[in-house]
Image (cartoon, rainbow, N blue to C red; front, side):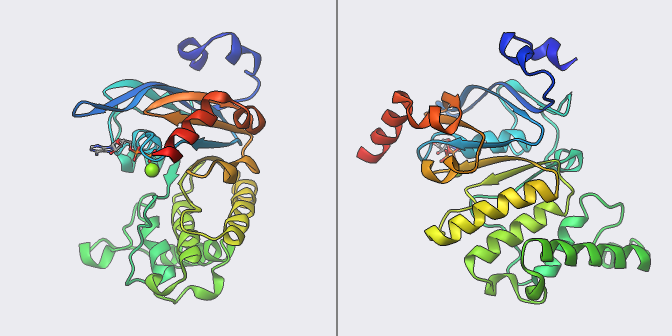
Length: 272
Ligand SMILES: Nc1ncnc2c1ncn2[C@@H]1O[C@H](COP(=O)(O)OP(=O)(O)O)[C@@H](O)[C@H]1O
Ligand SMILES: [Mg+2]
């Protein structure tokens, strides 16, 4: 069914490799500005794909279109064989897509554990805030959720920080906590928007290893935005490059590194 919509010579060569996300001619305009213009991309299950480009290229807007924050002016989003264009962000999360944000979005006054617990309400029939809304939740269910939240904190290396206030954690740990929150919704596809922003080279290296580990341990497909071209080159199998809303290149890291159009886009941005 999928192939009917997005078939083509190139895709048919790799059809034993199952597609999980397919973006078809995505376009969105803000006022007169085409923030994303005719953007198409296919991501296969288990891949780690990078999306790079200068500031303002349209990368975050692509994520907002995939996760349902924005509805495209034109084009379609397919996830796991079904069209999800226009569905609400909650619905899309429930279907198996989770994301983190370029600017960390945590509940600063809540503990690390509470931050993860809040995320569970998206996919459980009982709300974490149930006392407020008078929805009963069984003790058994509550205990199971707390145990899972703890194990997620352990998985991201924050097992000893469960009771710390989120805002008191160092920056790198806040980024990991955001990822733990995303994992709490049991995604199959994880979108990470500049997870290394603000980190020093050592923290960045550790984060990249961590991303590869969670991909394996949680059987994820990962779509990763990064501003710094060098950062993604070590871990992504494929990289797409955007400039002024348009996909200007796609390929393996070495193809991208040597692509004159990509080099020009980055040099142009540096000259600004
Ligand atoms: N909600 C919005 N309203 C108006 N302009 C927007 C909105 N979201 C993004 N843009 C514009 O779209 C362009 C692409 O932004 P963005 O996707 O955030 O770029 P990137 O993540 O690549 O740095 C920018 O010019 C930005 O100002
Ligand atoms: Mg951005």
